[in-house]
Image (cartoon, rainbow, N blue to C red; front, side, top):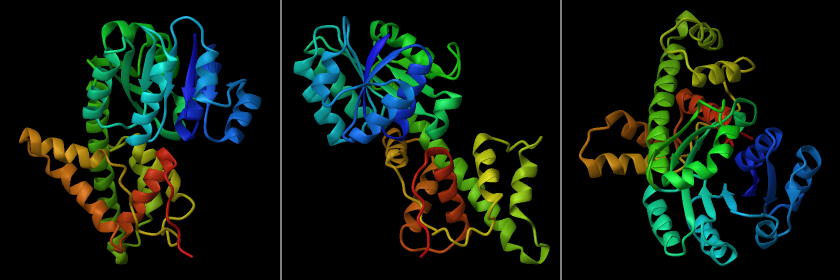
Length: 304
């Protein structure tokens, strides 16, 4: 297939590369022409100097996949795409948009007979090699049209992607996924800080995380990444104990309140991140920071 990819950052650029390596043609646009030129040279991306030019290079049923920051930027880009598309063309929002906004976008695009898919995307900076976990919200027709792209992006054509339900359900599922992620990360951070706190034992945190990767009931990809990050420096002296939150943890906590369902672990994990942003001290916060960097390439604050 031939699609347009708008937004070629850490996720979008790697997704475009994975599609190309799997035999698809990708027309790419980003505000950085340097990024476009690099992907053109290394991956044979079809370059474009504007969104309009990118769309003009598509034939037949046009599929436009967006990997843009959630909120107004995504909302504006969708509005700008409408006059460039035809009936039955499809827009895919693969970013971390709020599921309620996705429902609104889908309803708006339906008035123009333009298909919409909200695709929760997980995999971080490792997705190029390992594939992405894709949580899809769309009509059956739209999901079927985009299926070859989903199969190429996923870890295998059969696994790692799922049409979870109608428009909104993809980003809703990803929101809950990220809420769970907050809780898992917080558990590791608290446990490792407790291990380090018993100084008289002199426990090597890097060795313990490596140990737990083999046969332990807590083994996971998050643990793999943490163990790898601690190999070089288990004290993390140069890392600031500051942990950002991307927004989906907040939305998950709000959803729990709206449904009246207790979610103390997910909510508390979010609150802990807020506390770290108030110049708190703590080894656990540093652990959280290196985990976010390891799986998503998120910036770590460093001292000095």
